[in-house]
Length: 498
Ligand SMILES: Nc1ncnc2c1ncn2[C@@H]1O[C@H](COP(=O)(O)OP(=O)(O)OP(=O)(O)O)[C@@H](O)[C@H]1O
Ligand SMILES: [Zn+2]
Image (cartoon, rainbow, N blue to C red; front, side, top):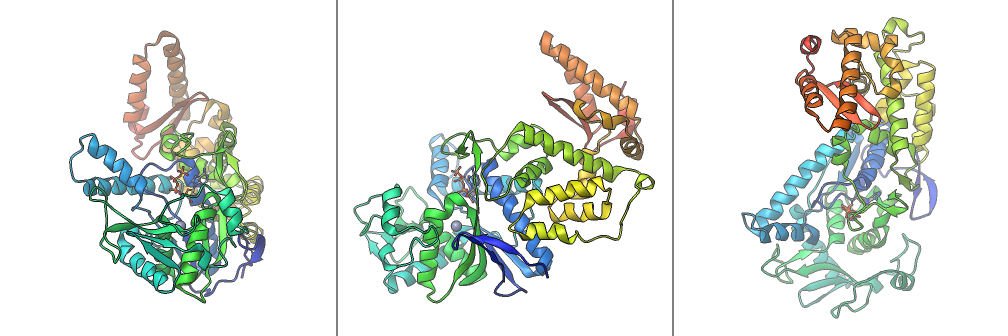
């Protein structure tokens, strides 16, 4: 069996991974607060932990790995968005508006993360479905002397848990000095954090022994991971921004509620996606959404590839250069896959398994950049078996890559492929004359250049509409014009376009 090594934040070292039960490997990752579209930073943990999920499934078997990622659908940020809509005159009660908002956001999240090739986790619990379990856990903490109630608030008593701060390797006093902790009159200690808080009539709330209220954010993950994965499970993941206080608090709650259990054995944290040296985040306003990129014509596979170029424990930037590099590589791979089988000198069609060196690269704390280097080696060696199996393990579907990237026309930068035999083969497969497509692309490109000068876009729009009508995806960017067959591609209509 492949030996997996993972960097454990708690021990600050790479450790050999041994699951509690190899027939039931358990992973929990903190999911999104569903009040808005996911930005590109939010997609990083999705791709990172999807890669881990795929590796674990490869090693332990598809049916022997459970991956739980929650939706935080009870949160003051969601309430605020719904309240703003309510005040702007939207129809429905506040509760209905909150529900609408979270449903809508979960739908967007699924569509956007599916586009990145991420598998859906085994379970995606919603916080609002586990309120009873959270109340029970909070009551247990009060009973054991780890939490106290003050006027409708329940707080966790940080000083009652001597290991608090172990994950970050800091003492409570250091943390107080370094953190912006909320000072509130009802707290016994500045570090104590909220498990339950009261809701007034204008806010969503649930009945509890402490009156009508709502849970704090941290208790959600402790309660859901316990219900679905048990008191001790294998891996807990999330972004490094969650290490403190969120994960520190999760550990305190869970270990005090279930004494003697390990909670999570391995803690994994992805580094941040940055914009000019700063974390991409909603609060800083320096973000763009995954949907915006997809709509600009950046395929999900390209986003995934760019994410994999950097090791998950290193900060990374999104740059046009990386995007171009990823796209060019995927195109080369796709064009090779689309080549006529007779032209491929070296083929190992039996090789359905990824090579050992490839699995070992991923098993070494997810060394995805080495995995991508190996991918280009398999391409160079024209080793289709290894290439296909490796692509699949990395979360790229070879068939859709071929469809999307080996298109009969490419950007001006990769025009050389148009006349290449690979592309011709693909074109013939589509019943399309490559020269005709080449001409159409060149015409569209020229019309666009003209329109830029004259500001009259009528003829560009007309040609673009006709192409779309024939089921062709038209992508225009600074780099040039690109035509790719879409799902409703109709060769006859395209052929008839003059
Ligand atoms: N810039 C980033 N780079 C990498 N991961 C990030 C980044 N921003 C957030 N994350 C991760 O995204 C996941 C979802 O987090 P959450 O929904 O709490 O984010 P958010 O509150 O919408 O983000 P923000 O931090 O922008 O307010 C978490 O695992 C978090 O660590
Ligand atoms: Zn969490």
